Length: 251
Image 1: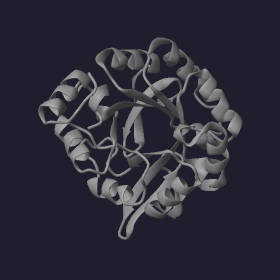
Image 2 (image 1 turned 135 degrees about the vertical axis):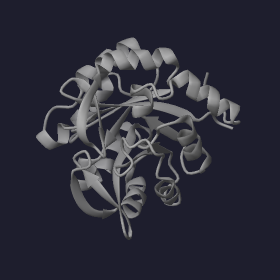
Image 3 (image 1 turned 45 degrees about the horizontal axis):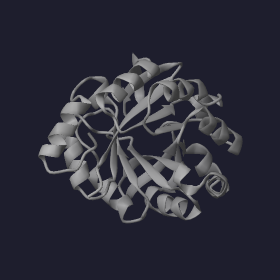
Image 4 (image 1 turned 90 degrees about the vertical axis):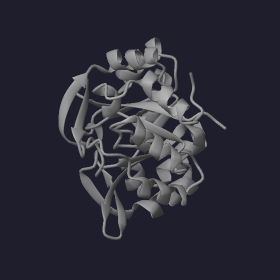
């Protein structure tokens, strides 16, 4: 059995790590460098950095944040937000990122995934999906959950995988920041559509929530923000509880 991956998600705005509820009402919870180092010292498996407003304002991506993290921590890093060109990806990889997450540009121009995967490899390309539930399923949103696209999430992830997405970062906008558990229906539905790894994000308020997502069989990893930022369940305690439940974890 492969160990489950426990990932810290750091959403960045204006040089700070922020957290909101359903991606709104963002409040500052710390500095990215400080939190990344603390989570690394606590035994985190990976770190994801997302610039929450880069696509909205057309800003450059978070190269400086990644450069600092790459000097201080030694776990795989994923970076995203405002990634629009092959040069943006190249810059992030040179700064120390191992993988790059794309949402808005992939929706606008799906062939961007193929273009990037052909250059950098499928394992490098992470499709970031912001999903909102509606009566018929889930709709994909862009611009940090602000803009509807009219695209069905399940159809979109299947297409994106065929185009070169090597991993899915699956964010439930409805569960973001509410700390009531993951949308396991969404996770299971996406799992049926793709073969690549799925990272479940949004909803963790306890170790039991993480355990439930991992035991659902639909996810290969979990990305947590509030759970770690607010010390609801520190990383060592989370790994201990998962191990006691019979899951393989990285020590």
